Each structure stands twice: as structure tokens, then as C-alpha cells.
Image 1 (tube, rainbow, N blue to C red):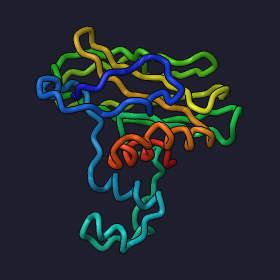
Image 2 (cartoon, helix red, strand yellow):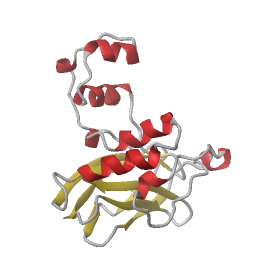
Image 3 (cartoon, helix red, strand yellow):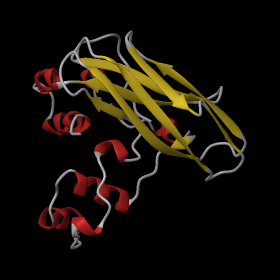
Length: 202
């Protein structure tokens, strides 16, 4: 939905380019969306350690985190995937569950196409999603495993119905990546730096 384009191989991978500007024509061609409501974000923020006073500044509601189900960044139904390795040059594995909603053609079938770097294995189950109605929801599980040789590895998942493609970035990283991300963002606006760092807060 923006003017951003994926660039070639880069040491900073998905962190090396910005979000771009809104493209109105692309925004009209929605097919699959990842929905998350207020409850999902509150659960996410509680899982990140936000307290009641901080949550009030965001939601203008008094929320006690132990009364809601806390979730990790990995649990949020977000159209991107970020997995942190336990330590540099170590085996990494993780599973993500996502739910997509069909807002395109009522009768449509999407096939999962995964692009991954050497040494990183990514699978999607099921690999085909078939919809029969607008607003229909279906879930899938994305699994990552492999060994980190570099501090950041970049991959992607594309749901393709033959006409439209819905792309999600995948980033696998370790502690060495954080300093690199900050370095690449130093010459960019503060807002963009915040967006980039939001990827790696697990």
C-alpha cells in the first residue's frame, strides 16, 4: 500500500529501507488483511511490561494487566515476523500463528510462497488458503528453524492468488543486530528509528 520497494541483499536486511509514502491506488486493492483490535494491543502492551499508568496515557482507560491475558510480540496478529536468536551464531527456532481475513474476491485461493536465505528453513501450514466469502477468516502457522551465521537474516512470505500478492517481511536476528540497526537509522527521522526498533522488541 506504499511506495516502498524491497531492495537487494544488504547487511541491514529489512531494516535498510523505510515504509515509503501511501499509494492510494494500492490501498484500494486489499485482498488479505491481518486484523488486531484494541484488546489484542492491550494484551501485547501488558506482555511488554507496560503498567496501568502508562496504559492509561495510551488508552485513557484504567487497565490492570493481570486481569487480561498477557501476550508476547510474537502473538500479536501483525503482518510481519521477527525472531530473535538466543545468542550469536546459535540455532534458532520459532512458531507464529496468524489469522487473515479475506477482503478481496469472495471466491479466491492463495498459495504461500516463501523466500529464505541459505541455512534458514521456513514452512507455512497450510500452504494454501481457499476462501468462499468476504470477511471469511483463516489461520496459518509459520515455522522458522535454522542456524544464524550473520547477525540479521531477511526472508519473506507472499500469499499469491495469481493476480495480487500480499507480502510479509520476516527478520531473524541476534544481539549483534541491534547496534547495526541503530547505526543504519542514525541519519533517518526519529519516527522511522522508532518503527525500526519496534521490530526487535521481543
